[in-house]
Length: 385
Image (cartoon, rainbow, N blue to C red; front, side, top):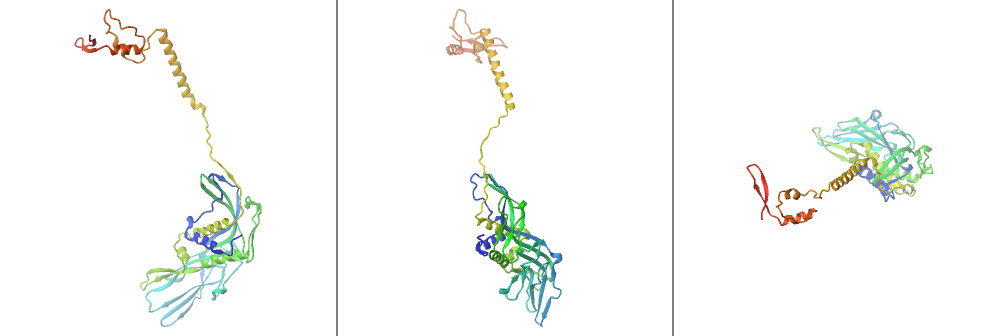
């Protein structure tokens, strides 16, 4: 696979999923120069996340051991979750002479952890079902307790991360990437190589239906995730029982505490790590690239009205010409000079041949007239000699 045993790149991908969420880099097609591409459905190796609320099944061990002196009291409590071994969740020490005390609020650990007081001897159970997933790579428990009554569990969630095969439907339309996960098929981790063989209807277009992760890579990824999702967050409570601050053991613990969508955050982690796995893969899926071309579709019915108007206008013009020719009318067009000339003729005077509008305009340039009253109601133009 080329992932290496966890590796810095996989660790960075996990951190981007925690802190960047939806802003984490997305997997993009290696080549789609036109901005419009389609691919057949295909399958690829990745990381899947599934979370469940297990608050109803979580139990604080009934025999929290206590140790008391005149100056301090120490309480050691263990949490039991479905499918996991009892985990010593916290050790609470109350000092009488201190006004502000640290109380547990959130505990996070791999719920398949085989706990040991020697951190170098930690181990992981390689069988069991967590959050409905059989033999996941790593189940993670996130438990919150009431800091004012630490034996009261207020919320408990289990999230199972596992290698899986995802079947995708991807396309690019006008430069916008669309990616839909059609199905997932989880792989089981038993400490050996992970072999995932999804059924034929979940394979996609990849010809091989066998995906594998060698045990070294699986252990490396398990260690990368398990090391980071392991810690706690405590709160400070003063003498008047007010929370004055909080102290996470790591930035990831702070992010888990602040998120309002734990399941979404774990899904972002899985997606970011999946994108890294796909980015280092050398297997490609051929697709189809489309280019934008202009097509003109003429709706001839819509041309009926303009065509009728043009033909009618041409017919009207032809009829007007014929009528004018038949009556031997001069072509004065829309000029008002023909009307103004009427009544300005003087007996025995000839203005020459006036057959065109331009001839009449030439005669008008040498003629002066005035508008004068004929009687109390009528006006008339008179020539000025």
